Every structure is written in structure tokens, then in C-alpha cells.
Length: 377
Image: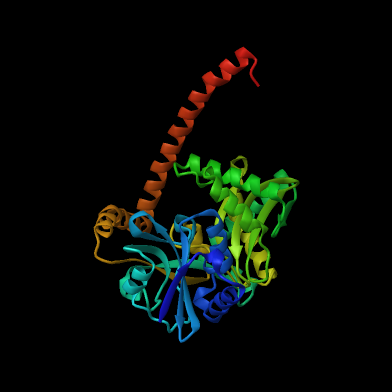
């Protein structure tokens, strides 16, 4: 085995084709965050992106995309932005994980959304978590019957709110894979507001993440692309989503809605209509990602699995990293595993968000008065 580390943008067309070939050959790798297009886009925006090219007998056997940060700290490609990572290879490939880290000049590699069961990383998996999916391989109606079986009350309530929204706000219209950049800007503004309102860090306050999203929105190849959807009441956008797809799988990424219409549960109404549009477009699955919202439990008709774990080589930086990350990872797993704790944590974050918003408004008010007094515009 030979391991060569390069930047994704340095891969030639033959190497990119091999990446796509390996990805298509293994159903567990059918995720756009594992696609070469995503790796190349990340490389254009971030200096720390690398890929280890694994060759065996002169033929490429696998690719390992990752981020190399200071002191040899390794992170999955896209880090907190992505819901899947791993080694792109045949399912039989097994590397010495510590030798892989040595070749990548990493002292430690932390993962929390690794494709479960990959031979190279399986010995280091500390937990395996379910990721619910909407499975349309038997058709949309079969999926809808499963949703109804999961929770007939929830489905009935959402359908009622869907009709009420259309009746009171205007006829509903669903747009699938819209290319309009203005629609994307509307969605990202909603998402930023949601992050702030709920006490989370606003990802779109970082210009490179906005640029990455715009780059992905412009992608529309047969095997990889961005999918922007929007639900309208009359001519007014009320809820949307932006995600990435392969030829057969759409991965949930950034859902959001206009809070003015919150009483109609527009986010869930949108998800039902998005599911139907995804199935009609030929997609087999919508991957909703692990953990989080209760709505995933009754929309799911299948489950994938992702793993959490850590590989390290003896070093001072690996030890410091372990002390800083392990308590947080354990606490997060406990909270995500217990709905009552998740709801309590969510309430605390939302309370923090309200306080922060109130303080920002108070700080802005004197500035607005001063500007008005001085004639500033």
C-alpha cells in the first residue's frame, strides 16, 4: 500500500473518475458529503483540506478526505457542517488507521458521523447512532403509508394545517430545485434568524460558509448537485430547504421557515411536499441525519448508521485534545439520547437566544436615535 497526500483540487480527472467509481460501487457511500465535488469545493475555500490517496499495486484503492489543523489535529471534511464522512474505497479495504494518520501527519482524528462498520475505523468506534431516512424505493405512497402507521395523529394534524395555510394565506405551490439565488438568500436569512433565536452559533455569519452554499447551489451534475426547495402560499415564500444530492440520495442540510407562519407548522408541511417531489424526481432516499428533532421519528421509513470515535497516536497534542473533547462528546451523546434532556437543553438555548436578541436590540436603539438626530442614512 502506498499513501500520497494531496489537495483535492490537485486530483486529475482520472483520479476524480476513480473516486466516483468507488463511491458508486458501495451503497453505504451514497452520500453527497462523500463526493469528490464537495471535497474540491471545500479545498477552494479552506487551506487545511487534504486527501490521502491510497494505492495498491499501482491502482487507486481509496481516498481519505480530511482537514489538518494546527498541532496535527485531524477533523472530518466539513467538520460540523456535514452529516457523513469516511474512507471512499471498496468495502473490503482495511488500512492500519494509525499508519494512515502517520502518513497524513495527524496525531489524532475525531469522528462523529463516520459511515459505520468501515474496516479501517471500526476498531475505534465508540458509539453507533441511527440516522433516520425517508425511503422511496417502494414508491411515495408506500412511504406515506409508513408515516401514517408511525403516527396517524401527527399526519392528520399536519394535513389539516396544510389545508388551513392554503385557505388562509393563498394557494400552496412547491418549487423543486429552484436555481434562483434570491430564493437561497431568503432561506439563509431565515436560517440565520433561527440560529440566533434559538441560541445557536450563526453559521452564515462566516462568509466562507455562505460562499460554499452558493457554490453548491450552482452545482447540477447527474451525480452531484445542490437542491433548493421552497413552499409558497400564493406568491409568498413560507418554508424551504437547501440540501445536497447524489443521483439517488438527498441529504438534509439547511431547513428553515418564516416565523410569521409558524402557527401552520410550515416546516413539516414543506417536508411532506419535499418528500413527494423527491420521489417524483427519481431519488430513492432523503437522509435526515442523526439525532435532534422528534419529527424525524415519524417521517422515517428506514435507518442508516453512523459512528462516533477517535483514533490517535501517542503525542502531547493528542492528549490535550482528548481532555478537551471527550467530556463534551459524552455530554452531547447523553443529551441527544434522551428526548426530555434534549427538550430541556433546547429551552435553555432558546432562552439564551431571546436574551441575546433583546440585548442587541437595546444596543441598536441608541444608535438608531443618534443616526436619526444627525440625519445619518
